[in-house]
Length: 269
Image (cartoon, rainbow, N blue to C red):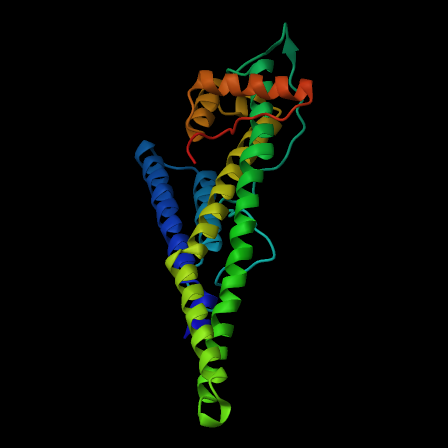
């Protein structure tokens, strides 16, 4: 039973499904909004289907066969969005330092690129580092618990007058350690902590890729409006537009000075 619990990691499984429920509800709201606006096009229907399939793949419900690996070699950010966007080469025309249309300027593009750099160097790196620490701790605890329990059971089997007090001491010590390890692992929700870091790393990966995909679109009219996109990124990171611009300026200054930036992109986590 203990080995099965360590294999399934109930706390991590609960966190997975909690995030899946939140993301499915979010997707449901997007689809309902699309239907309320009017008749969706074939491309919009296809896009919605791809999002559902990507989300189902990222957080599978069955435990057998398709369950997420609970002890991977290293933390890989959760990916719950479809990889359908094609990378394009930027060929914008500039005039007097301004991009010609749709709310985009050279300054805004530079700002978005600096935000991506901060996310890469600070937020993503930090969550991946912490997630890998939680993963290593969980691996040690998951292996130690059953091992110590087995040693305690073995020691109790050899208890008797012929073996002296050593078997009883070994059984008591191993049993106490096993109890402490199992309590810390499952009571401390170490698996859930790892899953939280994995999902947060996935969130920053999504923000980063959405900016890169937008900037890779060569046709400015096909991009999301620049001012609205800037506001959306700011809200995703828990900042105002002015704070986002200040962050980009700090990042650019740090890059020119060759010093690391001392601020994270997100103020949410």
